[in-house]
Length: 377
Ligand code: DCP
Ligand code: MG
Image (cartoon, rainbow, N blue to C red):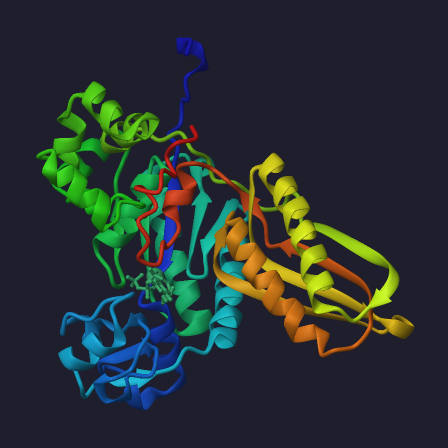
């Protein structure tokens, strides 16, 4: 970059992430369980339950319970914890209140999961102004919902995300321009969004434990091991990350529908046609590099009665398999044996698919790095 084109004011990104989100919502709703170990997830059935922990209160984390852990293990770690099933509808409602709160400040805004978002507040011009804003945001979310969040303020999205996690719960961590690499250096590589257990083990085997080790590692050997993802990893370790906060007001939805020449009540025909719609919609998404969160199936019956059914996923995805499974579930739910004139498929709540951004999602225990999310860059 030519010197005269260089940025004069720093880039300042805020990452806001709610503390033990589902559990905090439940504790807000029922004051009698506040301050207790609370686990949200599958029914533990006295230790025989299947399924996993969605999240738990910080009091439950003191017993070693974590998201994605088998619920039976959570039960054995703390049998007297309060185990509750998730109430997704309520969490989605509170989430949209939080996001409305964040949008109101008028900065470039990007929601990345049910409980986290980025704001690009570079326009403020200084980290001291960003600190004041971050405090104000924490207060306004608290006032609106009664819930606490943690905020990271940094020159890049990845560092802001790592910073918001640094002093949870209720934290505010500021990493100013030029401090990113030293802030990251002592942290374990697992703190990099998208590095799961498998990638961590792989890096550990190469002698890389801290992000500082990664920064100092020979980049050619990283590329040999991880392909182009190696470059991205190395840059992240050095605090380099140009990815931008992406306002989500582009394309609102992608949809396709098919009208049958003759009404049909044959489920295998409906499934066959829905598969073709999935292919088409997914191709459009891939062309536009978009990921989706909401899937809606429309069905028009004989006589023009039309019904829709929708499903919103926990996180954005670009998975064709997820799209297909959800679409077929919704289709079967709507069908009921009647004769059908038309079926349609729509995906909405879209966001831009960015190779690095995809590692910034709550990955639900999945190791997105090893599944080569870094490949595209
Ligand atoms: N979630 C889930 N399964 C996971 C991870 C998360 O169902 N494996 C859900 C429950 C969480 C919510 O997503 O409340 C937000 O995820 P976070 O990773 O932000 O976790 P929490 O907000 O619960 O805790 P933290 O305070 O660590 O952010
Ligand atoms: Mg959270």
